[in-house]
Length: 122
Ligand code: AMP
Image (tube, rainbow, N blue to C red; front, side):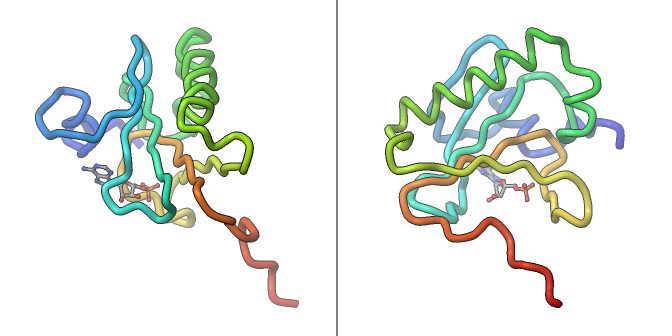
């Protein structure tokens, strides 16, 4: 899908709407999810215009990808969630129910998170 620069995270990046920022560098912004699903629920986004993990993994530069992965790990350490554990997750497309078409990693922590997905019905 082509990038929609009117999406809500693009507006956050342009400073048109506020966010509860937890981290920022040249390539990455991270902020708390507005509807947290766990006590710690942070969204990590690249500053570049990528719609999902699909085009980010294909088109982003080595520097952008390295910065993104390094930042996600650093944010978890800064939030103090490494010892008890955390989950990172990215939704792409319809079957994953992606709502915002700007690539983002969810970082969930702060309670036992259970199994990742339900086993398939046999
Ligand atoms: P996804 O379904 O992976 O696209 O997740 C989108 C996430 O963005 C959801 O968890 C929303 O609660 C979150 N979200 C939507 N608008 C905002 C906003 N203005 N600030 C922070 N998080 C938001």
